[in-house]
Image (spheres, rainbow, N blue to C red):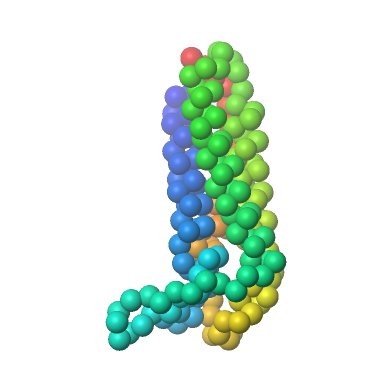
Length: 165
């Protein structure tokens, strides 16, 4: 049981880090490695200065929905981890981690919704950017999708996990 507890804690920390990276990094849509777009900025690499030049993304309802859902996912996962730590030290023997599991499941569902909205509405989100056919989804978008099953699985594990000590 101790190994399961360590595994689920490590899984939780990994998914939390992946969610944070997916939310904050600048690679949801990439054009030829020299220009990219994320949830917050559109950036272009300037060869002359060797720096990234970034401007705020054009606000659209779909982009705001993705931003809110990804931030909510990070918040749900963070709250879930803090509650888990609290329950680990205060809960009586034999208790189940229901609230922790539900928070993780909600984090997974909000990340799923955000990634799905971005997938289906990237033309509206990136409307004033370059031609979309010459671009592709970036690694942060892929991280968001990878987080979804990990969050849902860890949520189910938390719901079935009993405190033994």
